Amino acid sequence: MTALRDSSYYFKTAEIISVGTELLIGQTVDTNAHFLSGQLTELGISTYRHTVVGDNESRLEKAIRLALEDNDLVITTGGLGPTRDDLTSAVVAHIAGVSLVKDTAVDDELKRRYSDKSRFDFSFYPTIPEGATVFMNDNGTAPGSLIIFLQSDQRKAILMLPGPPDEMKPMFLKYVTQAMEPFCRYRFIHRYVRLTGIGESSAERLVRDLIDQQDDVTIAPYASPGEVVIRVSQRLDLNSDVDLTAAVIEILCDRLGEYIFEVGPRSLEQVLFDLLEQKQATCAFAESCTAGLASAILASVPGVSGVFIGSIISYSNQMKHKLLGVSQEILTVEGSVSESCARAMAAGCREKTGADFALSFTGIAGPSGGSDDQPVGTVWIACSGDQKTKAVEFHFNGNRERIRKLAVYAGFNLLRRSLLDL
Image (cartoon, rainbow, N blue to C red; front, side, top):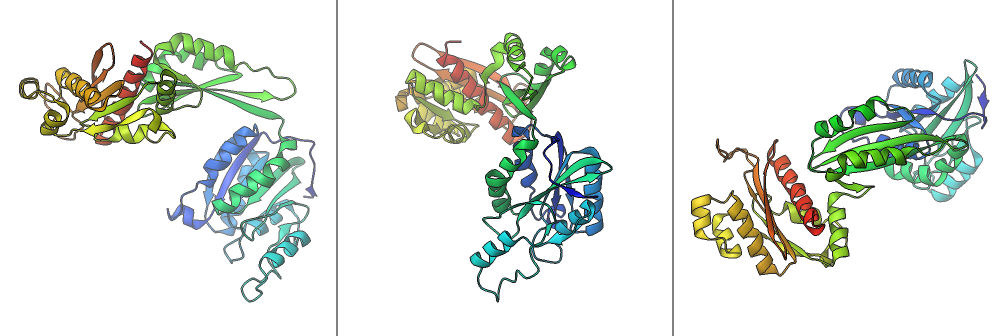
C-alpha cells in the first residue's frame, strides 16, 4: 500500500477509536468521542461506530483494520505520547505501509518551546507516518496527522489525534476542520422540535407514519425528564440537494402543536426566561416537594435576575402557614398535597414577593409518604397571575429525583402557558 495525498474522494462515514486502557477500566471518561461525533456531523460525515481499545498493539491494529472495512475515515484519539504504551503512530504506519519519519517543522517548534534537554528528548520522538499531513499541537508535544492511502484499490484515511481533550479539541478546531473540508461533499441539517407535557411513546405514536415513511429526511424522537425532542435531519449534497426539512417541521407542528414549546435549540427554562423578558414580567416560586430545584434550574439561565425575584422553600406545614399564609384549616382538613394548598401557596408567594406570577409546588416525591388516595408522584402545581390562579394535579412516575425534576418542568410549562394565555 502506498501513501497518497488526494482530494478526489469524500469522507462519508467515520469510526472513532479511543485508545487507552484507562478508558476501559473506568479511570477516565471518554469525552473525545462525544466531541468528535458532533464535529463530524457539522462536516456532513456520519459517525458509524465508537470503539475503545486498550494499550495493546495487536488489538489496536485489529480494531483499525475492522473500522477501515466499514468506513472511509478512521479517527484515533490517544496513544501518541513518548511512553512505551503509545503505539498508535507505529500501528497506523504499518497498516498504511509506510515508514515513521521525523517532521522538521514539528521538531523545530518543540525544541524552541521545550528547551530543557534534561527533561525533553526529541531525538526519537515524535514520529509521523511518511506522507501524512501534520497538525501542530499548541498545547502539548504530540502532533496530529492525517494519512490517505490505498487499501485493496480503495482510498482510506486515518486521522490521528492526541488523547488529552485540552490538546485534541483545540487542534481539531484550529487545524483539522480546515484540512478535512475538501473531503466533505455533504452537510447535515438538524432541526429540533421540543415538546413537554407528553411522553416519548405518545409523541412517537402521533408521528409513527412519518417515521415509517422517512427517506431523505429522517425523524428521531428521544426523551429526557420533562422533555421530548424530535430531531429532523437531512444530509445535503452541497452541489445539488434541496432542504426538505421545513415541510416535515410544518407537519409535526400541525400534529403536535399543543405540546411544542420550541422549534429550535432552546431549553424550556430558556424559553420561559425569554418570554418573561418579552412580557416584562417577573416570577417567584413557592417550593415544597421541589425544595429549591425549580429556582436552581431557572437560575442557570444567564441574566435571569432581571425576571426572577426569588423563592420561598416551605417544606413543612409550619413554613407554609408562617411564610405563605396557608390557613391551618386547609392544612388540617385538605392537607398540604391538595389543590387548595397549592393555590394558597402561589397566592401567598405572589403577595409576599410582589412578583407578577408565582408558581407553587407541593407533592409527594417519595420514596415513602404515599397512600392509596395519594400515591408517590402526586404533585399539585399552581400558577397565580393578575387575572386568575390555575392549579393542576400531576401523577409522575420514577424515583425521587425524577419526580422532582418532572414537577419543575411541568410548572415551567404551566407558567409559560399562563404568560401566553393558553
